Length: 168
Image 1 (spheres, one colour):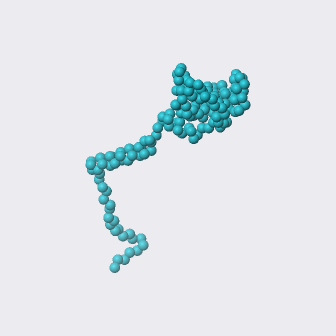
Image 2: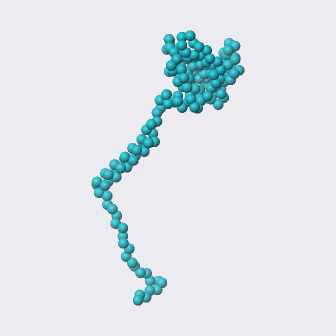
Image 3: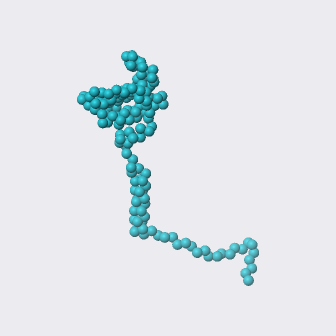
């Protein structure tokens, strides 16, 4: 019988775990597996992203809004429109998206002219012939197949003093 007191310690050997040593082949296989996982992750997270205008146009149809108030036929093919752009869409970024949406909508037309206004009062002011100093006139899209003219101008900022032009 072993007589022990509380101050004595018994040493019992504990079996040590063996550490695996990576050889050259194992290291190469490990690196290749990690590399394959990285490629798969990158392909899954961003492989199908497109930055084309066509993708932008398909997204804009759900995100930007305007109301067509008046339409007329252009004799040489196409259509003219007067539109009202709601207050929430009158900043530069949304006006540019509206330009791209209009461009997509008229891509098969020979000619197109779209005039965008902040509200109905601004539109009536333009129709009466008082287009000068009309701060409500905020978008002008034009496409003419005969002359090659094809651009959209947006007017924004305080008193619509700033202008951005997209040439197509």
